[in-house]
Length: 200
Image: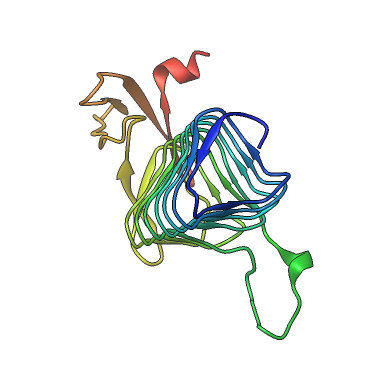
């Protein structure tokens, strides 16, 4: 480890793993050589982090989550208990497919609910929310709320995770913070952005 971090005595952190300031690694975790955990990352009990995985600052990975090669989490991502990532689309025990690993990108502030499954090769947009038990097979837009198997969008959420109620003009405010949002309805899809984000 190259910086101050706390690791439970039952956890295994291989030499060559990089742990940021304030990282906490709990019981029975395994962090492989080459993995990078940003500042203040928390790994709950029985988590696994593969050697090419990058985890951004402030992420919280709850119990029984495995981050396999190909997974990258930006800052402030929340992974609920037993959330599942994959990295091969057509696995067979007797077929070597390590050269076919698919990337999975989870953008800043996203939340993945307990027992959700993220099929590899997708991108989860910033501040999206994946409902518990959802099966995600396609990209998820920023701020989208998706549920079900397969996952489908049922609404939009703010950066604080509150449901957004848009008016006819496509405007909404977060009920928790008052932050303003805009809904743009395109020909084939829709997108949401915080107004102050769009101004940056």
